[in-house]
Length: 111
Image (cartoon, rainbow, N blue to C red; front, side, top):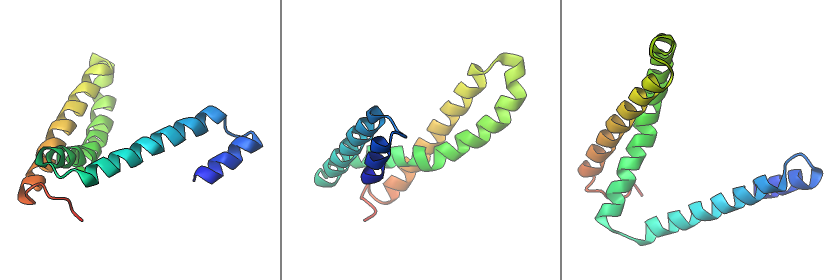
């Protein structure tokens, strides 16, 4: 992917700033993944399970609720209120589900 982005920068289709941002984000993600695999703290794994629950369970809930509530409530109360309600509900439900799954696994990694 990095080679393809480099070729697009050279060809002039993509700005060089985008390539540098991509490289920085990739390096941070690799460093974070290394940190997760080398530390075996129960608190770190609990946080990872909660974040996974928010991402895998909460985000689809957010999309569905947002699609339903924004169309019906936005004309009445504005955009920010339904968005805030759906975001809070999705994060809370996703965090609870992720924590419960993590508890069943004793906060151990999948692999």
